[in-house]
Amino acid sequence: KNQVEQSPQSLIILEGKNCTLQCNYTVSPFSNLRWYKQDTGRGPVSLTIMTFSENTKSNGRYTATLDADTKQSSLHITASQLSDSASYICVVISETGANNLFFGTGTRLTVIP
Amino acid sequence: GAVVSQHPSWVICKSGTSVKIECRSLDFQATTMFWYRQFPKQSLMLMATSNEGSKATYEQGVEKDKFLINHASLTLSTLTVTSAHPEDSSFYICSARDWRGSSYEQYFGPGTRLTVT
Image (cartoon, rainbow over all chains, first blue to last red; front, side, top):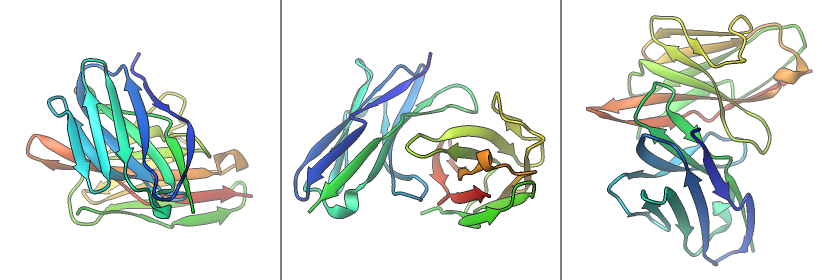
């Protein structure tokens, strides 16, 4: 069964601190993995796209890693800001099928001053 | 970057009435759009796939006669919630694929908050 699990479910950190969000998946066949940021009451916005051959990719203060062998990904946020408070959703794309996006339940990050 | 818009951003309607939500791809053509529903503190749940010029494909458990989808052009898909009930209150998000060669980027709209009283 194709599943995407994220941890932790929620996280509270102090402004300026770093944090790491985890994503484990069982989706097969794998095409790529995407991290999205979703602010409350808004649609998801893409942060990174990881293909099978990519281990690490950065987008500003966001760094995503992918281990395709263990089917794990992480999103590291450096020097957090209050505006980073949002839900972070891991989405795994399968190679097959038109409806081939599998969503994690998200990690709710709250950055406090 | 490509943008997907939704209108309205929020709507309140009375039980038994119908509500139409529009989804537009602003600077690319989308042969396929997707409609999702999201309840509080939950992830997006795919409702249906909207195909330009043909009938939508609904996920199991989604009533096609209640959630009418029309993809009349390459830049517009509409979702009509018919005979709305309070349990239909949710956050509805559309998504569209921007194909670039053999790969694509999937963009999400800002969502529409529906409240049925």
